[in-house]
Image (cartoon, rainbow, N blue to C red; front, side, top):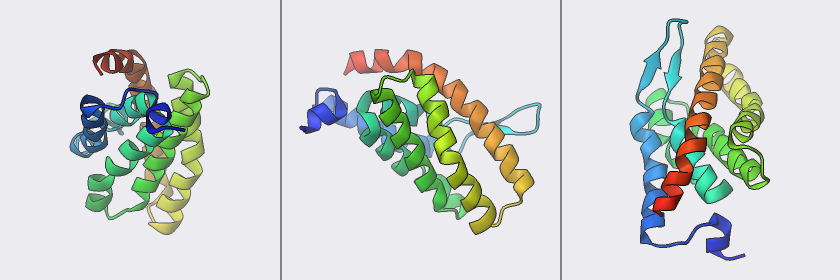
Length: 161
């Protein structure tokens, strides 16, 4: 299988630059969390992971999830965030390539990521389960929101490629 077939996009300078941007962008927007009236924060980084997974498949989702989580993982002292977002991006890409709707692919990928997230945050990192529950809910809502945005924005981005 060729590299172009793996990504399902013409590999050129523009598409490689876009993949790099989608890999770095979550680090920049990952520092921004929007508070809600319900007491949890909406995360912004997922949009890049989902667009990357939709455009470049599991490899793109893996790259964006892994590279894009580096800043947050370092700031929080939790390297498991990187692995969790690699799981999220990779499985979103796999399921989307298997012709799942992007929103459904994101939800299923999140459900695959969820046990890893819970085990690492609660049992390895030692975060209180009440806090992790809030994070889990915030991530679910954020993931669904950004999956909807990604579903309608990635075709325009891909067209630009």
